[in-house]
Every structure is written in structure tokens, then in C-alpha cells.
Image (tube, rainbow, N blue to C red):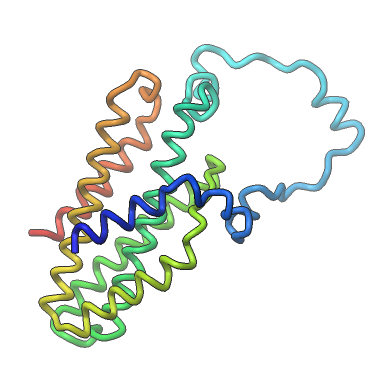
Length: 209
């Protein structure tokens, strides 16, 4: 089960699928300017040289703007995490369709609620950082729900074994990302993202106890 979840996270990060994302609604939202075209006066004003970013400016130091190589690393982290949290949410939705009124229903519901919170945060990060989603989101929506429902139909023990595997793999993945952010000075300004990973990791792993 754990290997299945790991394979899922590897596939959603595969670069060969990224060009398909332009057909997704979220991709269109990310690349659509919600503001009206600038007027002539605004264009002339914006064409004038503006103040340069100071050395203390987050924009000038962040890998989001400074180095495409490091921006690509951050983008991949957020993209994979978004897909993973969406898949986990769908797994729990599938399980709740069968076990909502059982003795394990409240436990699964608690984990599902937590995954929704995590998913919303990664959706915010994708919008803020202009990160493209994986092109396989529609597939993982269906596959995650099917996996959750399938394990629930096998019984409570199988369903709970699946949830443990999901939480374990996601926790390990967050640990890997935290280590990556600590491995280079290029990421030293990513404190907020690192703390987000730590918080979500701890919340995932607490369900194993």
C-alpha cells in the first residue's frame, strides 16, 4: 500500500505530463490576468524606470525570482504536495462513502477535514507562486476515490491500513522536502514554506499513534 502511494506521488511530478496542464481550468486561472488592460497613462507610467529591489527585498533574494533552477525545485515541491493532498482527500472521501456511519467514521472524517485544510493551503501557494498543477488531476480525483472506496469495501482494517500508509508516505515526503530546503543557502528565505511543511508533517504523523 505504501509503495502504491509512493508511485502515485512520483507520477504526478513527472515533467513529461506538465505540458498537458494548459488544458486544465486551474492552469487557465493561474495565467489569466483578472485586471483590465492598462490605460495609456498607466502604460507610460509603468514604462518609467522604477526603484530597484534592495538587498533586503524578499523578491530579490527568493528562489522564486532569482534562479530558475531553484524556482523549479520549489514549484515541483508545491505541485507534488498539491496532488498528494488532493489524492489523500479523495481516498478519505471514498472511504467515508462506505464507512461514514461505522465506528471508524469519525477518525476518517477528522483526517479528511485535515487534508482539505492542507489542500486549500497548497491551492493558495500555487496561485501566489504561479505554479502549474499536474495534468493528471482529473485522473487522481477518480483514482483516489476508487482506492478509498475499494479499501473500505474490504473492511475497517483494510481501510485503516490504507490511511496509515497514506499518512506515513506523506510524512516521509515532507521530511525530504524540509531537508532539501535546509540543504542550500538559496532556500534560506523560505522560512514560511519550511514551517508549513513541518506543521503538515506533524499533523499527518500524529494519526499513526
